Image (cartoon, rainbow, N blue to C red; front, side, top):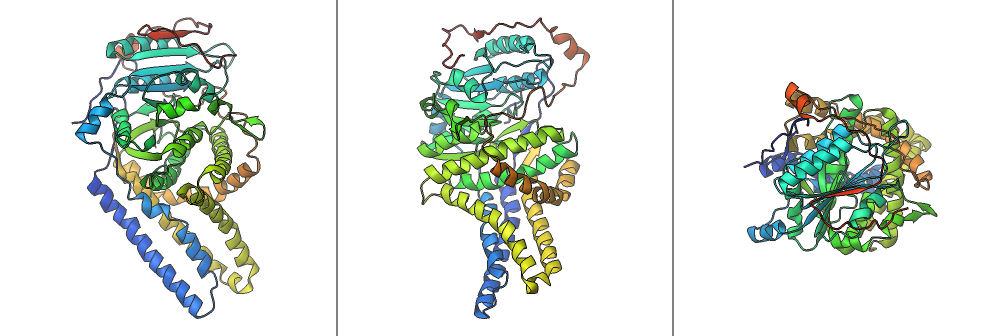
Amino acid sequence: MKHVPKLWPGVAPLPRAWHASSLGVVLLGAVPLTAFLAWGVAHVYSTVAALVGRSQGMTLPWLVSFLLLWWVPLSWLERPRTASPEAQSELDRLTVTVQIPVYNEDPDALRGCLHSLLVQSRPASRIRVVDDGSVHDDGTPMTYDDVRAELFERAAARRVEATWDRTPNRGKRHAQMHVLATDDADVFVTLDSDSLLDPEAIAEGLKPFADPNVTSVAGHVIVLNHDANALTRMINLLYLPFTRGLRSAQSVLGRVTINSGTLAFYRAHIVRAAAGVYEHETFRGRPMQMNDDSMLTFYGLLAGDTVHQPSSLVFTLAPERWSHYLRQQMRWMRGTTVRHLWWLRYMPLTGVVFWSTVAEYVHLALGIAIPAVVLADPDLRAHTGTLVLAGVVIGAAMSYLMALRLFTVHRTDMRLSQVLLLFALSPLASVWRALFLRPLYFYAMATCHRVDRWGTRTRVEVTRTPRETPSDTAAVPPRAEPNTSASTETLPARPRTPARFEE
């Protein structure tokens, strides 16, 4: 029976989401698996025919391009991980600390995040909020006094320990390690301050740890403001190739390379061991202020298996303005480029991570080489129209195959008509990826040394305004005057742990 959370006054109703049943996923997965099998047979046949006839043309490059999409069919083999009754009993005894770094977050979004955390079917043992020096537009401190007071009151009712620190602004990594470096929990959960957890998220996210080889677990990220405007609808589609494509395929192999800060789980001893190194990572002499999530995943990769749990669902607020979206993409792309260098240097030469990274760069190179060869060769140039049409058809087919993932999650905040519309428009997202994101990626690779600035949030970027009723309005206490002093408050009382990286 699904856990039904009790709604607290002043908080917008929480959406729910469920991963589709195994039978439903199998039926959907049969479509891309069958398509890839047929496509693969056709490629092999044409390659053999071309080699026998000694006229290869574009057959071999097309075959290589097809093989580089190995992750598409493999991703459909992913299933939610489960735990036996004995293993579940062990998981229930684990001490779980959830850390939430906050910087210039919308108070309603933060309130919703904390509310979703406190109505989990498997409660966290500790909640540790660190405000990394948030400020209003005029430079005065943004201290979230109302939200902090509500957290302590409601955490006490749930018998969950809660702390709230305000530190000088030093970046997300310092905010995380300010508390995690000395926390003695068994599992750390990193949670973005604009996230909304499904009530089963923590319970499901802990299940993969029944396998002692698993060191980190990525949550399943879906877009909360999916219908805000055309941009958020497109982002909903653009997430799929990574969150339910490459990441799911990597999870089948136990080699997920990038968790999302929106929701991720780590064996705590791995994170504690990285204290003093993680928050001081540099690239070309500059401090890394991005890709913190991939660095924590990297530590997990070095120690064991890293997986994705599709049944541990979390909603996130996507950018609603193009300028915000562009800055976010640049940050992600530059950080990923740096992390590629780390994987090529430190991952085993015989491992999946090393060769999948090489394959990604081969794919990028082919994306330039194939059009160049077509334009340079007179015979091929004469068939440009046919080749372009073939590329469009293949691209559209791939878009629809990937968009089938929309039907593997059931959501209370999305109507079937909205899902069908997104599915129908999925090729437009692929066009955007090819014409804008791919060139932007090359620019990000060339400027990857610019890693010392966060680049996304200098003020509140996305808001989540709750739907108020008269009773809701009456229940929300008036906003208190800001408290500008740096402080730590704890509930229940416990000795304060000194900040390790205070300025």
